[in-house]
Length: 68
Picture (tube, rainbow, N blue to C red):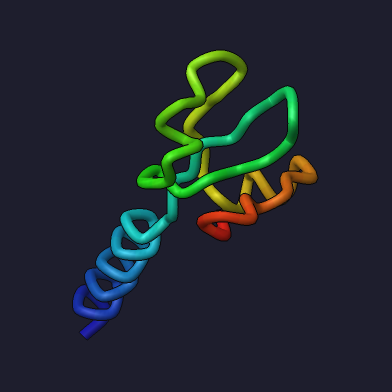
């Protein structure tokens, strides 16, 4: 029974990590975009791909077009 609960915990953790939403974060402007946003695709300088929660923690502002 203990093995099953450990397995379920591991699966839940793996699913949570897989569901982390990645965004394109502009380090100069502080805005972040969904990866499919036209502005994310045009951003080549000062942009990094990070987790959405990390972008918010850095004080990031969601894009007005895609909503981040």
